[in-house]
Length: 362
Image 1 (tube, rainbow, N blue to C red):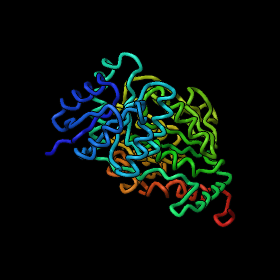
Image 2: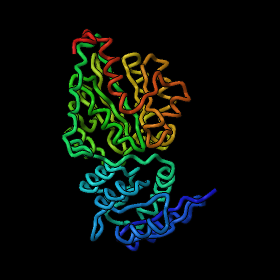
Image 3: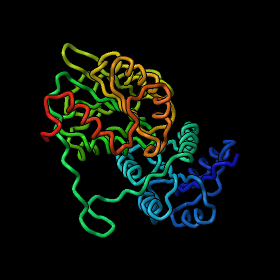
Image 4: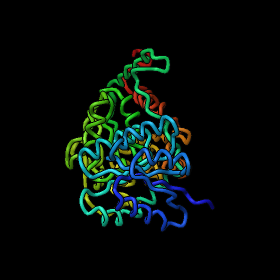
């Protein structure tokens, strides 16, 4: 089997050396080159034609975001960002994912050498995943089209109407999920049922991610806090490094944020969230499995369906990585398999069909 060919781009000679060593230790990949800045990287990519590149965010002459933007426009390819565990690092990383990067590794601000060695398994797993991922089309701002004319405005989200019982929407996602979840949430109306989300993401990034979505969506988006009431018109994201589940408190649903061992090697884990949906919410739950590597949440999503929930999985053609949805479908957990762009409307239509609002009264 041919090895995955990787080019490392980082201004730190130490980081380049460490990443090269980590990659070359794997039997299925090799570092074919390393570059200290995007200009050297550009020539290296042209000459070596790698399968994946790792890209630092902060570099001299041209930062990683500018280079990524040009790369995804001119020669789209799988990119794993190497960012820092800082607030600015989180913001820039989210921008990189928006531009089409497959995933990211968060290196510590101090103790980089030891930190990267501890992250060796994560780094190689993400390179491996990136090599098999579907590269997203570059982000095109909505304000313009190819012809330069104003793009059609996004249609107003339909009101769902008064539901006979309180529904909850549960979302699980991993690789590629930050943008997929954004697409879904941006199309939900302000009177949407509460949305509870587990996105595989490390500590330090979920708060910035929630704040970013809150500024884009019609519903409110926040990082979940243990014990808070789960309210309609709000979305709650599992904090990085903690599991998120829901519990019942009298007539209300509350968020439960807890520490504990990883489940399916993940913390937060979709399995934990979806199991609570099956146990606590049952037939009033709607489950959505978005793009991601692995099988986290597949068994619990089947348990949700057995408990009466209605479940949708993202289809293969629109997934960055068709791992988690594929496993959920194979487990018999899905009522529907849909392209990403149709999931929100399908959920709205289903909710409206159970509300007092007629389908033709929008």
